Length: 311
Ligand SMILES: Nc1ncnc2c1ncn2[C@@H]1O[C@H](COP(=O)(O)OP(=O)(O)OP(=O)(O)O)[C@@H](O)[C@H]1O
Ligand SMILES: [Mg+2]
Image 1 (cartoon, rainbow, N blue to C red):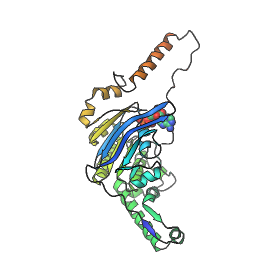
Image 2 (image 1 turned 90 degrees about the horizontal axis):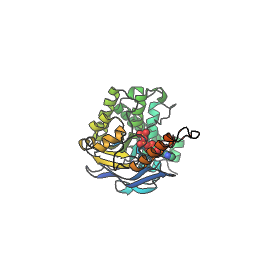
Image 3 (image 1 turned 30 degrees about the vertical axis):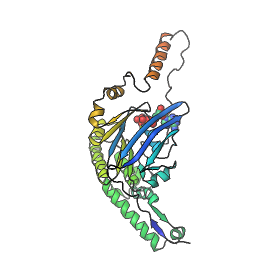
Image 4 (image 1 turned 180 degrees about the vertical axis):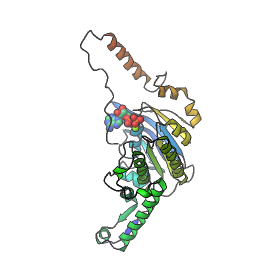
């Protein structure tokens, strides 16, 4: 029997420039749909890397492959050199934390409790310690609460520690998700659209927050549709289009790439990933239009699979 209450140390910090994340040839298929195709991406210590691309490009799916929510159909993901286990909680324990595009908070728990939940991979109460609630348990609990309050202060939510999460405005819920992710003491933080639904002031504040997180020694990989945010923030940006990485480079290189401009404007261009399929769809649509009226109309579109809800 043990009454030990242990606080696990956070993983060792990576040396500047050392790769923290190495994704190689990551492919994710859902039946006939290839959502992510052969994507390579490296994030180094102290880097902020952006991942952009049109809706449905596979960005969130790629995050899900990095965090053990999905097991990639092909490819490999390493964190600080070690292949990641295909289980979310093990990935978190290894040192990767994330926020979700669709906010996932415990709505009926307080702000502080939500952050405490995020700490569970770094604390372990021995069974009897938890049952008996001895001094070791209370010491560890107090340390966790202190750290959680520090993180709430860091994101600007300390004054709302006792509020129910569901009563926070949308922008603050996103900040709370970041605090909860930081509570697992990660070496790499993945942010999926952290400024979605925020006003310009909140977006600016989030920019500063991400810089501060990087300055704490945490590498950041961020998905965002707000290009100003991305290009202000990121050392490097990778562009996904129809599941494939189109280009990766610094902000100037990516912004100046006409294929990226075309992909965002929705104009297909020669040689773009998936251009052939797009051309086939257009041809089929043109044919359907030309023959309209000759036969009862069939619903030809709606080929886009329903969006996954659990992400
Ligand atoms: N669990 C799933 N089952 C089937 N198809 C899926 C699943 N998850 C995602 N997809 C499909 O994979 C493609 C990529 O979706 P994903 O959500 O990764 O795109 P995204 O780049 O994050 O888009 P957005 O910018 O709109 O968030 C889409 O066609 C989507 O419908
Ligand atoms: Mg997404």
